[in-house]
Length: 441
Image (cartoon, rainbow, N blue to C red; front, side):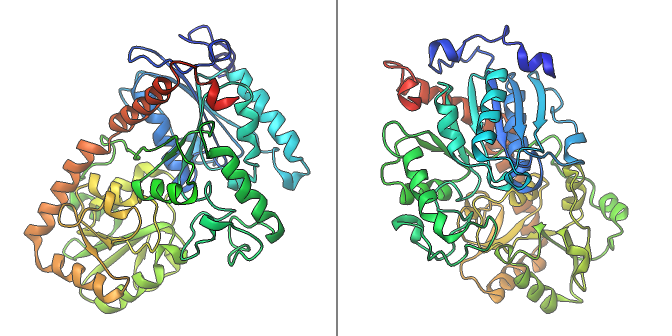
């Protein structure tokens, strides 16, 4: 790994010298990802899949994070058949303000690590888990490396929160009146306005750092927040369709201890007790359909729920296709969701989806294509769609097969890699006359 980080001899362009992102289709790029907690949880899995897409495309990739998960860090990262080179995820667990390290010291250390890697481009993911300041982006921009900030949620457009809910302050000025300042990621009220201003300095105008969003909904939120946003695009997530695919249902149920003759409703999230994930609504579904269906739920604290079979949080994502394949339908109860990777995973495993028509969900869970969507946030509306599928096995099969076809057409690692390369090329083309230095100076 050290040799890979220090050896730039294989690079086909040197960003430090050229200050331009001149992407060619036959070019091997050296891409650096920076995030907070490695491949842990939803955004961490998304970052892993972005890395895998570049590896599938044949590029050289490395990462820097605050703290990689003990389990997540042991799972092989390179997809079968990928031709790119993975240089590993470098963890810096000491680099945290709670350990007495100043933000200036954190930024200086990350700048040095980035210079050692010498990337052709830097993709910044979530940082709030590490409490790393967004001033890091300005410091990296000063190195004349092309930088893209990725929106896994709304943290980059608000004063501190990952999801804005019904609050519209992110458009007019997040400040000390923030109603959720104590929630994760928490921030003292007197600091919120400065963070809101900082984001507008980083991303707005002709010299703004380019943004990428995980859905059209997220991109739309960015345009609402940043009237001066000029460099932004929707780059949908992809997944390894060779891993996420249907497994024999009888076998899956036997291995999981799920009744073979039951109608199985699957639910789940990283943390099923998160209000935003709608666990309280799922519990109402369980109460109404108890006796008519078997409930299988994955995610943290799922073992504590009554009347369901909980798997807990499955940190090894390779086990997830087995769980999806045991289900007749996947029911997602998210009340806010930028994209919804679980819906994409269910579709890849040929499982029809029932969910609410909110935020980015209908971009992957498409009504009457691979899903049945409830258009009002109401348990009865969701139950109506679930009961429809319970009574119509032929329609379930059609939606499941359509979901698999949708993933193969739009949400594979290769398709995600194509979107990334196209975006990088568009940024390079935009700056072909003056170089990408106009973004970073």
